[in-house]
Length: 569
Image (tube, rainbow, N blue to C red; front, side):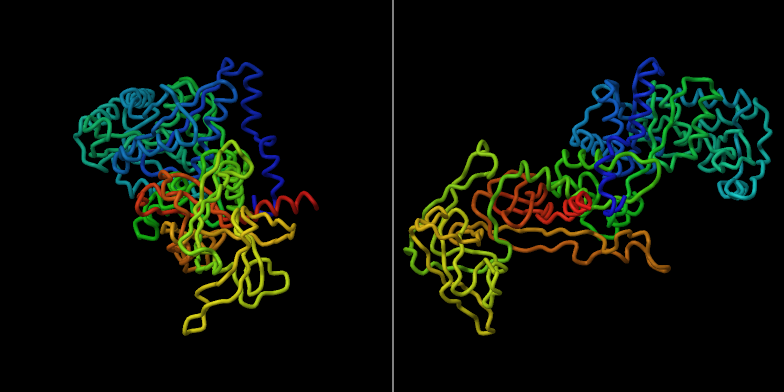
């Protein structure tokens, strides 16, 4: 989907073909009326927004049809897996608002059973031990237009294969010396069905089973049997597993075990983003970002640190729907969901990011007063707070022009504006430095306009936010932008890579002045800086003495304008 197709997002829920399949299965009594889905991540990295789509789909379908969703770690490759990833995955799923209860499983729970299934295939003459090198196996697999060649070890007897496989398990062979392969069809038009590898030797300790195993099952062999063991009814996979479905079905049918149904859906492709785990690792390893939780990353921990609410991500996943073909979703739509949520729940505060000094010449020196500010203008139940006011303030430099156009409603010489919830002030003169730049604005205030209301009924259109210089807290503000300059970073000219599209201005760090109450917020708190945007107190670097805010989103909403335009046309 592109930004030119917003109506598809509006209609997504009605067009969710997987929801329709499950509803029909429940109605017909298929699977005995049960609905069991699963989310099966490999614990070899951090989850990203694409995984969030799968999490919302699998857990959401289970909730809607009063079923269950299993969280299963497909931990079959100990060379790339770590407990750190297991913990982060569980944190991410919980943070998104889902719970698996007691239904947390690991493929490693089934290692013994999977091994027995593999022996059963050997005894049925449907699997054999191949002693070729990995290179030889790869070379004999053929191409999309040419069939593969049978291994010289393909016709080993059942007894010899069983003996060799058991010796593989016993650790008699070195890594790469041999593998167990399914005996299917080396001329199959589906290359994956050309005697795929089922087991390989890996002399690497596993994060759960230690050194108990030196052989490990392949993903395609493990996945379908794990689904079967757990009684999954609907095995929902992304489209890259469409060709794997034939092998999924073959393994289960060959072993004559319970057989779930695999259904594929389009993965999430997001503009100005890469989703490949390999490329995300490259961004981290080459220092393009500060880590997996860098707020510019599409990882769930990165989005969380940036201040994206889980409700907004769930809303986004529902709006984009579930398609049968790959598409591209506009990042502006995700930002729109974030703004909608934060506009509803984020308290309002004042912060000045690009300050210029404003002095009220006729305000009593040394005087301080406090004004009552609502925490949310549309929710009186959210309460209010006192904001200090004094003779010297900071306002946004962009809110002043020495030579202003006729319809300029902010500060300029001779122009009157309203300081939010405080007083009316009029610019009387400016102070410049030696270079001729304005460094201070001298104003006079109307004492009768306290609270921002004029006693004589005059109307002032311009309203500015401000911070008292005497009471302001200094804060570091990180202005995040898109990590890539190109809408599709993978669609680059020959000789270029996605790394050539990195936006050099994806992060700008500034020192800002904020009202004192902002320094007391807990890590992770989300707020709106009035007239500027939505920000989040950084969870890692912020301290009470030195607050750090990450920009979550600007106030400008391009997706909302696209939707309105579409509806009017």
